[in-house]
Image (cartoon, rainbow, N blue to C red):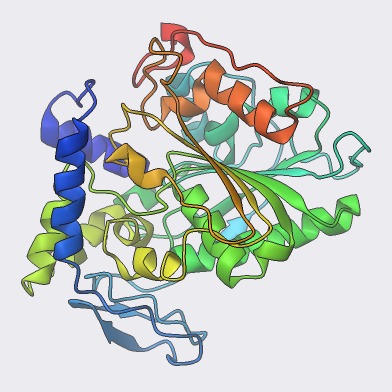
Length: 385
């Protein structure tokens, strides 16, 4: 949710580097929960691409029988697409450098990915699919992690999803060439389903492991629940994922409260941040339906990582999941055992500790230990650009 990060810094001056007290987090979560009024997203087949009414605002259909509105929003139409990468960008250790390169080279892949001739080995039988977040792309989401994952022996793949124009509801960020992940999350989950099927066909595997950031995590979770992904995903590793939505340092909470009074302020904000941004606020129809029948699905092994300094998915523990029947969940706070890693929502994907968590989750025998190094807020890369 890159746009939200920018807004957060803009609204607060310098984004908070100190974590919010647990009591304050719980009070905020209780306040938002008490004000939820949104109705569930309509079932597939109940809409025809026209306006759909639910919650405190009217959304738009996608023309295929799905109603994606009712998040307290009324702006924009549906649309967007996924795309393959072309060429490769360099390895990066700093989020700032990677983000800039990704804006100027929006279609390149992060290094080591998308070798469509790669065949999984007996040691690593499942390919790994990397899923970027809102306002990001495949390159700047994984320019640090991708090659080490591939070098560890995994067939690694990624793509760009949720590419929507300003007219299609992608928000102002959609005018920038490297900004993706802005379309309706349900549409993006269908795009992920198509890509996973291609990976399985190319590699001959039965399942994949997913490593996802921010919206990528909640979108991947939707894929497992509603797009057939449960039978095709063994491990889901997420960082700062908006599984239970976000308050965005209270900005989302304020918008939700105003919407619940019947004033469609989130619909206005959606013009700027795009469909996906609004869908990730606490209490949206998307978040409500995502978790209506429990956090998890049977057969999936979840590793869920949050950072205390996350200014986007906050309170940060809203990212954590509770295991349901047949699922295993490992919730990890990045700073537990490594206080010097103060990664925020964006730089967590450029944290050596976060990378070690990925490798440990994918292959714990070969990667039994977690590293601990300094990784600064906002810049990442150990403080080097």
